[in-house]
Image (cartoon, rainbow, N blue to C red; front, side):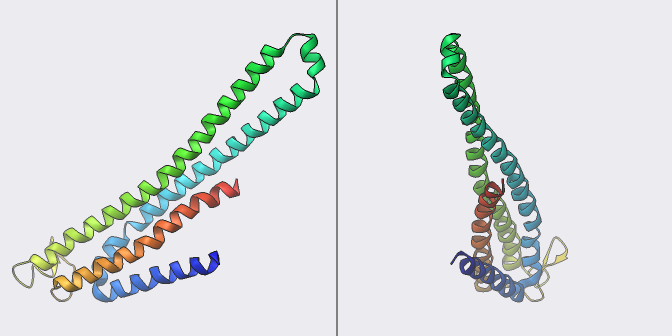
Length: 189
């Protein structure tokens, strides 16, 4: 079922990109130029999450080891009155475990805002360029932005709104994919 959902999300993204390119391929490419940045940031967060998860699991293993040593050698611990030492050792390791678990939670929480900020940046760029294309006084102003040709023919507000809708349709599957990527990295660890 998840494979079908993933294929449907990819198909939605590809069809939205294709239709957006059909409407205005130059403006679509400007917006899609931010995709490599998003991929880079999300992959960096994913790699960091994978390392953090490995450390987290190692810390959990240390807690189990400390518990096993303490319980197996309970007679020795009592004979040498090392209860406070064992208690401190266990406390330090659980504290360490807590900090590593919180790091993973912070990284997971960071993924969504990073994706959203890149999406908002792409939409802001599209809105600014689109506004120039719709508001221009003459045909040259309605097809060029800062001297760069952005449209073959002047765009009307309805076409621009449709382009924005299609670009928003691309961002939804990408957001979902970025959330899944972090989980995959945790599972890989």
